[in-house]
Image (cartoon, rainbow over all chains, first blue to last red; front, side, top):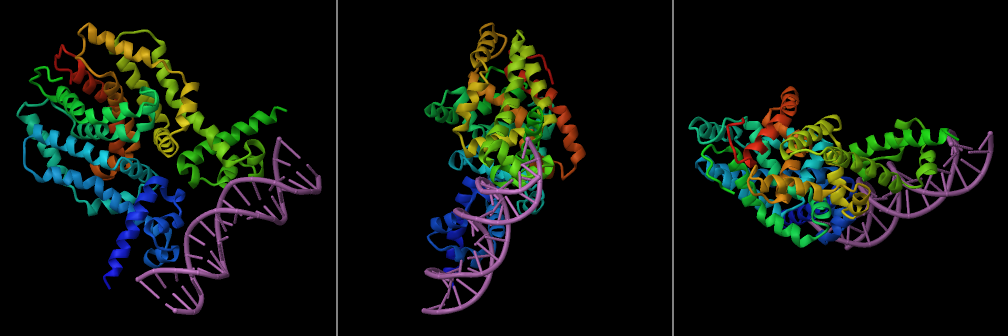
Length: 207
Length: 207
DNA sequence: GTCTATAACCGGATAGAC
DNA sequence: GTCTATCCGGTTATAGAC
């Protein structure tokens, strides 16, 4: 039957949105069923238990986060445009799916073992990233850096504004949501110039 | 009675550890009772409901995160040493209480209204921070920057390594926990030099 | 494959003795 | 203040008809 894969897909989409919003324990099978416009029993027919359904959803979300990295790595370029393309697409993804990062980070902390299974499905070539960095370093384009620190720095700058949205809006912007939106729009270029200033040796003022 | 305040404290400590580990819905009153070595009924005697108990714990955790900022702001200094002291104490706090940031960020996303109540109890003088930045900017010590972007950049660099521990260990370090510990120890100086390079105009190579 | 009805379970909350 | 026993609502999961 091909109704089969279709219903399964519909369930997964519904489950994804509910789990991301409410977390594993906070989510209700009933709510997922409602959103998928089917009944609870069918959820169990397809996925057996809530936990198994959740694991499926988690893999999907985890995957989303990695796909961008893969895509950016697919194109062969120099360090500078790699940096620009990566930051632009990553903030772009998070702007479209703002809760995904928080969701993945949280559930990963709850059950760190999950990462082992998921990481192999997303075989991002991290040596390639290291290679791009090393090359830029060797040709004296950028200062000597620890690749791991650099990579986490960039990820931090991209992801944090989304996981900390309530604090940023509430504390730094006195609750003004328009300001937050504007801030998010400015982010890519702000991150890019911040990182470039931190790294590039030939520093004409880039700000 | 003075047994009173004592039991209350014991409960709060137990609740804190369980809530931070499991989240609001994931936590079980029974588990909290066990950890506090009392029975469930007593939890309700002291805090009435699970939600109220949680709110107490959340305020405590939220407070921890803000106290460091206050303390750093208390001392009057120039931008450079403010930067160093802030980054050092903030990563220090998170090293001692690694799960606190993830907890606060997650629960804040689930119920953003909470921030309003908590932010007033922690009246951090954000204008003072803006002032320090502006002053450094005006005296041409640092490049012109958007204060909000700069503040979030620094927080991101400090906090992210802790909320993303599983990914960093699992993906970037092939599961080697020793490497992660070493990475965390290197963090303060790495962040400091990264930020300084990004900001300071007089750029002798600081790496 | 999809539905309705219901079983089985779990966990927060309360009653009431001490 | 602290305990044991119990209630009660809600939620996952299953049985069984279509």
